[in-house]
Length: 245
Length: 331
Image 1 (spheres, rainbow over the protein chains, first blue to last red):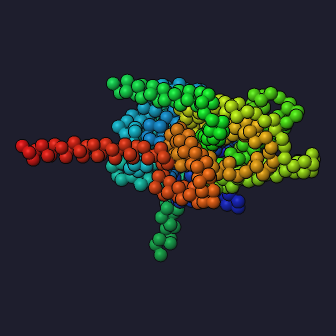
Image 2 (image 1 turned 135 degrees about the vertical axis):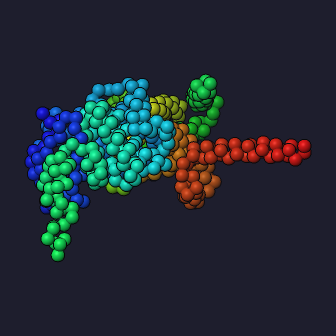
Image 3 (image 1 turned 120 degrees about the vertical axis):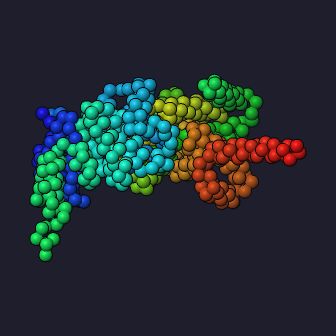
């Protein structure tokens, strides 16, 4: 049974169908990718899974349980954590407290202060940020801010982690590090579902990729299948005939 | 060693707070009755400022509702503690004012706390007007008598009740700040969307903190009514009791718990002096002070302390260095 599955997932904003009738699934323990041109509905789909927006129609199940009607904090406590495309850290707190929030509130059972602190420290160490726990988040570089976002998500002890364009804005070396980090998270037993534009990352670590275009799923398969898929190439590069003329 | 320093610092703070409380509690023994009245007024402003900062400080939701809940407390006393026919003893009246303010804030919070930024500020301000008009309508149309008389309490009774409310307010504010609940509030102020995705039940945290802060505003209103004796909708629901606590908290600085306390104490005392000495100009002086604070002291009075400390350290370091170079020059 897949850890996450959606059937007929649809989201309309007024007359615009941002996501329309998408069926998808993410298998336990895999790294699944979600790609598509700008405006394809990738982030909207993430927002539907994490309940930032309610579904217009369709159903999303996490470990067989329906997510419809739940609030974002309930989804988080069930074991679905996320990061954001534009970084959304708590600017009024240092790094450690940012992660501590996730440790305190992200689990279904009440956690003691000592356990929360340990959880936060572990998460920070895992992403390689334990040297900067007292720094204010706005003083960090982009890549470190992204690391803190991942640590904060990990501190909620998720089973599924949604990564929204984690590699965007990173340089080549940083992308390689981030890819390593994602693989490391998966090896901990956390399933990954990632939106990504950086094809190197998709090709390198994803086991399965879904392609969204204008809110519809147009292709799905291994990275190799996707990059040779005619329709996908057309979307990204334009139609062959037009390119030739 | 750090721990012992920390502990001794904490002891000093606790000792200082206890000393101030003892001084306050014994002041009616030797202070004049007019000074006790002044102290009561200062305590009232401290309670309003601290309870305002309890919610608006960490969450960043700019509430202008203190006067509304203050008025609810006043009119609770007018109902339950009416001159000639008090329905309940004074402590029960205060508790009732707390409960009614809490419930009204809970209901209002559920409806309005999805508003953000300036919209919430405007609504919370509108609440003062709305409740004032409802009470006015009730007085004019239903009982046909404007204004209510409340049982008069002695200066000392008012003072001690005020002091008790202050202690309760400070204790709650202190523990809220330190608890995980306080951290949830801070995360809402930092980024509400992220907070909700990290498992913080933002609606519950906001609504309950708003209601808890309203509780103290209602309590302080109820006891003030027994000092004012006669209350009507325009004195009870006066927007000044929203503006002043906000200004005081900003003036004192919201980074620390004692910021609003300090701000309210200094400001309330200043108000008294300015009112007596320059009755025509005191609002202008207030305005100028506020502009200066906002422009040059973004952290308020409290924000000044680390700055001064750093400067002092810098001067000391310079002096030491200067002394050393002088020695070098001599040798």
